Image (cartoon, rainbow, N blue to C red; front, side):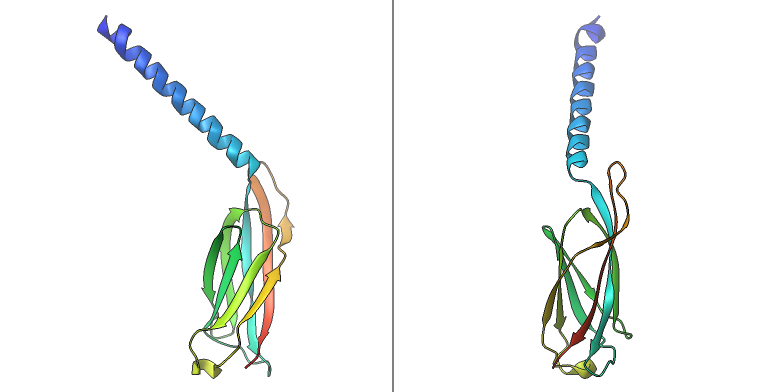
Length: 136
């Protein structure tokens, strides 16, 4: 008797609040689909040689990710984020004179290139690519 009178109404209320919470989450996801981005590119000096150890900050929306160039001057990272119209890429020589150093910082605004259309909650896939020449 106590089970029917007390426990069952409490369980019903708990399930209702969970269902409402899920609906709210789904509607906010519908408003802002998540897209996949591949941020990639190369960094070279004026002579065409790859530059190792350059810090690349990919600033988008309200987030930023940090990458570093490898020995061949390449950088690459996959990200999932809300769709954005522009990435701001900042290239900074953080190791001074090491690796051919003393390069001036450089900033580029790069528009993502769509490679796959959006579908449902997926915002599609994009490439954000930049090939940069650093100057001393």
